[in-house]
Amino acid sequence: MDALLFVRALVALVFVLSLIGGLAWLARRFGLMQQMQPGRQLKVLESCGIDARTKLILFRVGEKHHAALVGANGCQIIDEDVELTEIPDVEPQDLSSVIKWPAGLQALKSGTRS
Image (cartoon, rainbow, N blue to C red):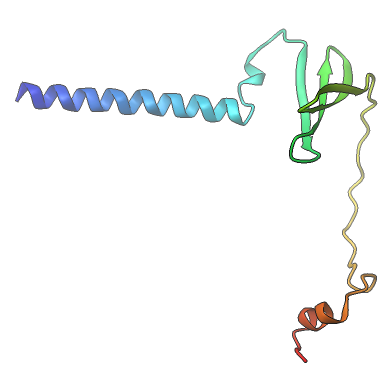
């Protein structure tokens, strides 16, 4: 009976530690831990994949914003004092009247086959 109780306690301990580790990993993965570090001067604001090996990163150092390209060949600073502005909301346009579809794709798009 004591061995069964020991095994159950050990399994419960492993489960709880795994749960805590998993939640910590998720918090780090989604950037929730960055707000918990007061006094830091460097913060990544946004990143965007340009291609398979290159990222464009917008980051803040103190009160200045910078943009950099980071890739397999190193890092290149694009702009050292980026001015952030609000991007206006624009309604998406229906481009179906503008796009010139090839004849075969036009038939597939309209749902008719020849």
